Structures are given as structure tokens and as C-alpha cells.
Length: 431
Image (tube, rainbow, N blue to C red):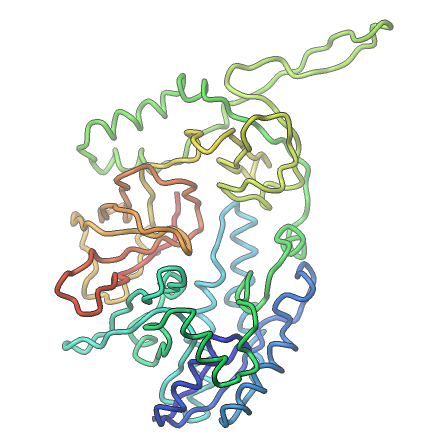
């Protein structure tokens, strides 16, 4: 069997290639370049020239052929343009998930097969399981701190049939040890961070390549707002009732509406000379706490970059409104605006790893859900309805963000020798 390893210059893909070569496979390495523009990237982090150089040295050390492929046009068209459009609309995409679906296991796979490859191997910490019925399952890796199955949550059966994950059953420490013993050039390299094949970026600067700055208000929402909000009271009533009709699920998933928070100014005299000045009138529900340079540059749950002081606890972004160019913030980890009872995924955005296991309208399924990479799995129930797939959390979930991918896993099967959660599907959160 001929296997193409996607060599990134990191230790994980290097060890993957080494293990496959030791196992007797016909292996070659290929480095993909997906990005040219360095604007917004932080110098010294994931620069592609250095990564390519290290990847080529690794291939030479292992004794396998090495190739280079430029997929930057595909990346821009299928990942970067989507990312910019999502941010412009006030949503928060995950480009790494898209990179795996559209580039690594699609465009890259196609190039690898032109070179004779039967399979593509990567350094992801996850595992595949070949089932008796011919399907392929995607399982978590055994290293609890490094599992990367979430990033592969949009892969199809066809893509998984051509994918191998040689280090998914290993701990990171073991991978480092193997690399050091083999004296691989990547053995001591730090793990890459930031956007897949772009690198670590200053996100606002990076986004300003396509999105224009526009000054707007930062509005702090006080807890009194929720005490007086009919919408918030209705959400709590629905949760307490526990019935969850289709209409109630829609109400639960709907984001809180802060557009009614309006502020008036008043003129007052200040100082000995009684100079006229303008200030905001007090409002029990909130206050204009500062300004920002564009609502599209912020995401729900964000803490850094607000530049607003004078608070006992940190401020967090709880909502963004790109049309009004406002961002809403709340003080403290327990602020009610940070938490959601339910998330909705549009019918056309629901993806199942094995389509035969998809829920039909009206069906429910208890699962465990991950809303972002490295987040612990949360207990939840999937409810498939004509209006979409609703994720009903057992406990309120923090920072549910439109545009992010929600991935759901099967409950553990004690009789499964893999003893690992199986990734069943995923979808883009609409609200």
C-alpha cells in the first residue's frame, strides 16, 4: 500500500511518517502551502518556508521521497473567503475544521492520489475504526489533552476510507520520545498554533485585510436587564416546564435580544466655570461602557482586547450586532448573558459521519457534545425537528457562538475495546 503523509514540519506528522515506514508501507511525504500573505501573522510563528525546510529534512532523515504542493488558491476559495464572510456577518467560524474537510482530505488527497497514493496519513490525535458493515468510525485519540477528533468532525465516509492516523493511539509524550530517539529534526519543535497552515495571528489585524474598521459602542448589560426581560423569563419557564415543543425549542435557541437597550444623553454643567458637557443618562439595564473599532472583530466569550477598566471582575462579550455595529458585554464569569440552554443547527448544515445513523424529524438522541476544541464533552440531547437540529444542554452552555461547529459523540460503550467516544456528526450553530 502506498501512503502519502502530510508532512507539516511538526513532530506529530514526522512520527506518523516514521511509524508507517517502519511498518513496511511504501511512504512518501508531501508539504502543502496554503497561504502566502503574511499580514497579521506574528513573526516567527508557523512561517511556511521554515516548516517546509524542516519537513524536507524529516523526509530525508526517514528516507522517503518528498514533494511540495501549492494549494493556496484552493485554500483561499474554500476556506479563507468563507472565514472572512462569516466574520463580516458577525459569526465565528472554525477555519481548521474547514481546512480538513476542504483541503487536507480533499484537495490534498486528490494531489496525493495523482502521485499513486492509496491513503493519506496525518499526525492527528484521533483513531479510525473499520466496522463489519463496511463503514468507518472516527474515535477520540487516547491522549485526553491532545484529542483532535473535533477538527475532523465534517469528514465523510469517503474521506475517512482514505485516511490513516498513525499516532491516534499514543500519548504526546510517547510521540516526543520516539522523535527524540530517532533524532528527527522536528523532535524539539513546539506545537503549531493559530489558524491551520496560516499560523498564529493577530486576529483583528488579520481580518482587516478584508474587513473595514468602523467605530461603535460597547454596551454593558446589567443583571437587572434579565430580571425585567420577558424573553429571559420565558426561557426559564420553558426549561422549568421540561416539555419542549418545536416552538419552545425555537424560543430557547433564539439569542437574547438586546436591541431595545437604548441610551439618551443629557447636558450638565461642570467645574467652577460651569462648562456645558454631555453625558449618558443613567439606565438601570445597562450603560455605554466604551467604544470599539468594528463588531465583526469580536466573538462571544471574548475577554481580551476590550480595553475597558473600572470593574471588579473582567468583562466578557455576550453578543455582537454587526448591523448596528454594537457589541454587548457582561461583567463576571457567571453573567447570565454568557450562557445558553439550547443551540440550533439548520437542516442543511447537519452532517453525519455515517448518514445511515442520521436522526429523522421527531427523533431524539442522548449524546455528549463539544462546542470547541479542547472543551470537555457536555451531556445533551439532540432533537431533530423540521426547523433544524436542536442541541438541548443538560446544563447551560457557555459562549455558544453562531458560526462555530458543534460536534456530537456517542455515549461510551463499556463493551467497546477502543473505550473511546465515537464522533457521530456535527453542524454549524445558527443561533
